[in-house]
Image 1 (spheres, one colour):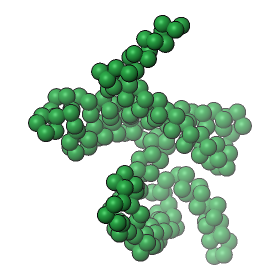
Image 2 (cartoon, rainbow, N blue to C red; image 1 turned 120 degrees about the vertical axis):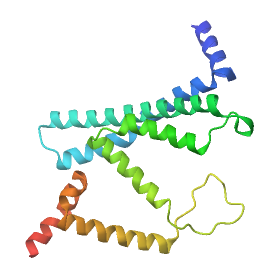
Image 3 (cartoon, rainbow, N blue to C red; image 1 turned 90 degrees about the horizontal axis):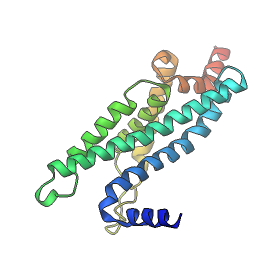
Image 4 (cartoon, helix red, strand yellow; image 1 turned 90 degrees about the vertical axis):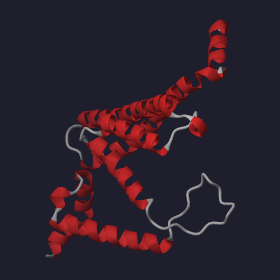
Length: 203
């Protein structure tokens, strides 16, 4: 046992194995994160709005959790592998050992195509979540001091957020009332509880 542990330690500490370990660690983190995010969400949504026996509901929860976690893990493997291939094949000069912006985009594109391209409820939710974050990244940000940490998120400007929130809620309520068939099913179920029944009663 001690010999196996020593061999593993040497493998982990060997800089030549950094890329392989990065793939393994990334996949593991994707698996753990996907489980932590999806399980409580699926638990609440399934028992609130799902149909079927408790056993059937639990199977749905576990299935959604497994799909979310495994897809994130496999996406990490595809994304990082594609980055490594591009880095080793195309990076030269001052970019040697680094990935360019287009390489990062292509790696994400390939991973997204294969792991999230099939339209399932879980994939659709993940993609919509990312869409919201991408759109929000275009909003103006609060001014920050010159020594602001480079890896810390810059808060969205409050006025920009207020306008953005008003537009989004005005749009989503219009869609809910007049084009509900084009909205996500989970969102419609949630909004039915708060808005649709009240609207129908009062009119």
